[in-house]
Image (cartoon, rainbow, N blue to C red):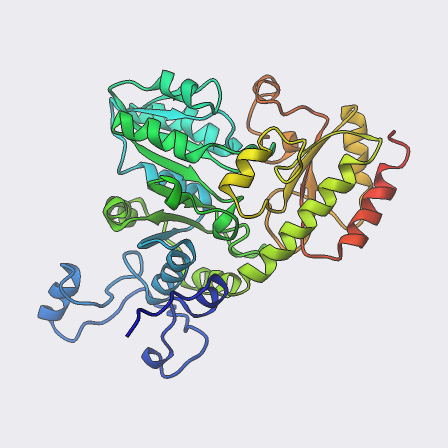
Length: 394
């Protein structure tokens, strides 16, 4: 008998991590809102604690609902394992904690999330870890920062808010040549649009708050990868305490069930809005990897299957950018991305607020930059809204 073909993504999104026969036939995974789980006897308790028997003791260590959500996410990424955290930043710190200690060094690529920059500049040095910032995402610039103390190379792709693409196979080679691990924040691409683990990434981080949940009602983070790389992450998580709540895990499972459907709309709307804005005379430049004008378009086509729902665009002045943000009707002004609702903001007021204006400008983030997270509304309504918001800005 031939081997069964693996389920496709839309099927995995609905069925992975759920076994109805284990839960009285429940089609929706139960929420195990319990801190403590009783053991039938001390021998069983010891077996569970030592990993010799399957079971649960305390939800800060392991919870059935959280485990089901972890299994679903691992299935979406085609990974062996996933560990869920209480937020995306908890996942960043949780991924790095087992890999770095005092005296170690980490190489960070320059175009990453603003709060991650703050963590690398303020928290890791207090732990005795040196962070070396690459001049660019080019492999030769990354390699120039590597020393014999380098343990981790950290990247984000696509990036926020300029939506640049990092050449993952090339950076993976730099990491492997250095004997380091490549840790990548793949939030904006997601399993629908890219497969970082197949391109040489060792640990993949998600802010599951964004596209994976997709409804703006859960803070969640995840680290995904091979079991060998995740053992330390899972082992240290109960001591760090950034664990996921069971109800949040259930909401995340519900969001992941519709993730492939939502992503198709995010991808289509993102491209449509990018093309609309690029053709508008009031807009100076559009940043979206699905456009032929984007600096990383060719790389994105090689490395991604689609281009996502995040885009940004430059107006001719900061005043014009502020006007557009304030004048929209359907786009809510606020941080975050990946929800069913469209959002608009200036990164200097949201994702990169904690970064100094000088540092933002050095990253290419001007005060005239506007960022859009395309939701799943009718695209014609969104373009109509942008049309009226752009009036008088040309």
